[in-house]
Image (cartoon, rainbow, N blue to C red; front, side, top):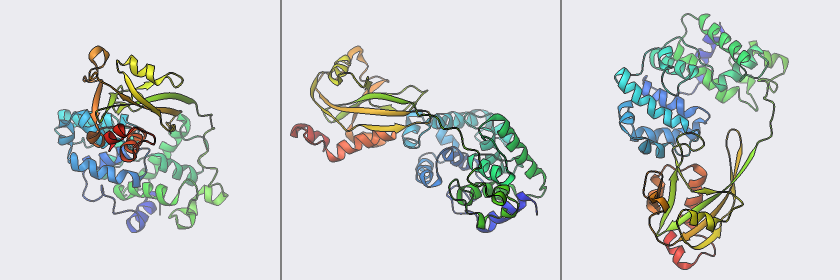
Amino acid sequence: MDFATRIAAWQTRHGRHGLPWQGAPNAYRTWLSEIMLQQTQVATVIPYYERFLERFPDVAALAAATQDEVMPYWAGLGYYARARNLHRCAQQVVADWGGRFPPTAAQIATLPGIGRSTAAAIAAFSYGERSPILDGNVKRVFTRHFGVEGDPAKREVEQRLWALADAQVAAAPTLDMRAYTQGLMDLGATLCTRGKPACERCPVMDTCVARREGRQQELPTPKARKAVPQRDTGMLVLQRDGAVLLLQRPQTGIWGGLWSLPEFAADADPLDASRRLGLEPAAHYRLADFSHVFTHYRLNVSPWYVHVRAPTVLRDGVAEGPVMRWVPAAELAATALPAPVKKLLEGLFLAGLPGMPAADRDLFA
């Protein structure tokens, strides 16, 4: 029996069948799950997926929403360009395809935020198209099973893996594409894992090069490790009358489109930074430093709590405009905040701040 047919047969008997996006083919739900699962584990995605689907049950509902309405339902999943592209994609599906995802992987791949592998997964699950996938888990399965050396992120290695992916589908003309596609995902996620692969339960262990040669830990070839660059910044928790000043970050870059805290140079005076915004500090306290690791660098944050007096309008009148706004404590839970900023603010509002004056502590209650 060929490789692909064995994977499909194994998935039918032993694969995952209870995930919330499985069941009757639905391109919208498949697409949403595939985008959320990029760089994110299933256990993390499930509650986000269910909450998102409850608010935006179909592509028309998502397309009709504003980006500000969408972002709170993504906040915490990271890689926020995915959410912006998700929104743009929904609008394009409604405008150009009458609210129905196009039927082929090649057409789906023309939509915002959808690459070749994701397009193939949507087409396979929704329409049964014979288009192979090649996500991170599948690359690991293929490099081990077929003994492919070299960094899978490099173009020449990736091209070889795509050729192998195409060949497996071509060799199985009666293949159940839904079972095979899900089987590859399941195999990579549950058996052919990064650290301790369960080779003894693998349906294709007898033809696996890595198992035969004892190279499971060598394949895929690891990337050359680089020193992680460090960046330092200060953040201001500017609080007035039970509200916190937030600014909306640019659409591109880290935390794109989310609401975050004003920043200043880590070695600068937080009171001067507050005054540059036109605000007069009444009290201030240093909060615990924290770090957040992005794909290419580590951000070290030194936050300060600053209780400010009136005025209610910042210099240049931007406090109540689209760039900055005062957000009442009760509205923070529904605001699209970066995960570490949300954790910081929730800690303050739930626990108060040691040494804070009683009047200020009452505002955080």
